[in-house]
Length: 289
Length: 153
Image (cartoon, rainbow over all chains, first blue to last red; front, side, top):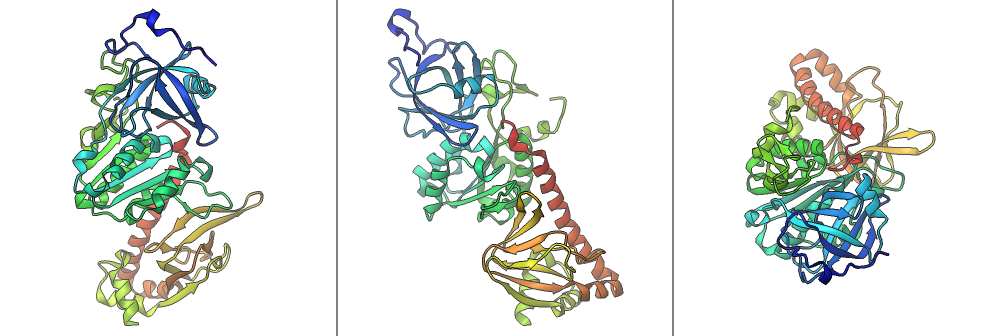
């Protein structure tokens, strides 16, 4: 377990310099699936709360290894704990997977554009998540559930690879038990014993209960899945203006300076990661971008 | 029969068919009920029907030597089940199993094949509709093959 640094002796104003990570201590690690985990963090310095909007991300620094962008997966109404859910797939996330309670991570953020859930007031809301894409959508779900009376029908369509890859199982069960949320889960590959749906998530769209003319859709997952999902939503009658997707590119500085995440005329870190589908639709299918 | 006519006329799959063609299809239709866990059809059996699912769920499965039955897709209320009746050798390529009590309208494919041979307009209308289903299932299969959830979003 790492020892907390003496912050007083460092005399660093973390709040002023956007390139300096803030030290956060891991309070809890929860294994979600074989390769996916959630960390709950608390600030070490005098930062009492970590306010963020659903859809925003942080740059997470594993000391001595590197820094990567990870979306916030926690509840925006509970800013005392910062929550990140990620898969252990790269050098940094694999190192992060080895950290335990009490270890320290560096955090810069929150950055980026949020899911515009407040603009969905009075409308049906459809969340479409693919794989780990459920994690960046979860804060928006918390937000909608917290103000449930403001929205029409609320539907979550969640697709993942296999039954053992289903994230946030208990939460999905809790949401499913409510009468005011429609939760549909599907897997690409059914294993024996799985009695749920098998098939791609885009197939759920045609039979999901929402009024396409009055729906805001929030989509997060692999880019191919988001493209096909947006097409299906549009085919069902949802206006591209009301379809939002979250992109991930090679974000480094996270403040629109370095240009690593440039995507055509936008920087994903500051103009995104959440975009209106209408804004970036044409760029998504261009190899040159 | 009036009930069947109403249900078929309302279903998107048959939308736009002329009243004459719809009447032919209604003449080939009957209600079926499959209990939970029972098979709708088995791979290799003669395929002489297709089904419109009215309620319940059906899983399309493939028997594998090591893993047993693997579910490839789940079909639901409103979905069309089966197109093997349309093309030779008129045999089912997969197993279909009712996951719960499932009510469907069965359409006699053998009868419809003859009608389509005699009325190519009807044949074309049906083929267009099945081509759309095949395209969607092919698209799904391609997405499944890509294994898109293997990478970070």
